[in-house]
Image (cartoon, rainbow, N blue to C red; front, side, top):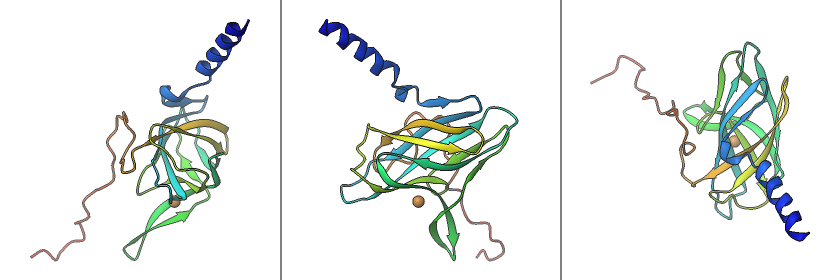
Length: 172
Ligand SMILES: [Cu+2]
């Protein structure tokens, strides 16, 4: 009897674990490589990055997120303010029709504020994303090393880090 229960329990665990697929597909959206960075014990904030693609000619907007691992979850963007990089809360991230929105270091990200425990490498953070049209989508972000620049196994190179030397005219 007991072993039968164990068996059922294990297969449920297996079925409900989309982590290693590393891609969450709903009818309208594909969310690729959600990831975050490990945090130090004293660090109370974390950021989650991912690529969100629309499957077809309907745009959507990411308008919110929730996680049991943080007290508050907000959508942020980085902007240059007099040469200083600042984070700012935004209402939404637009995902264009037949296109994608990239949440990456230096740009849009999902901010976890008031972490209930440090984020450890190789664990996952459960997140519920809220979209204007697609509604709620459950994902799990994989925690990478503290200094990671992108998700392990992400196929696309990051497009940030463009040289900023094009202000013209004053070369010596
Ligand atoms: Cu932020």
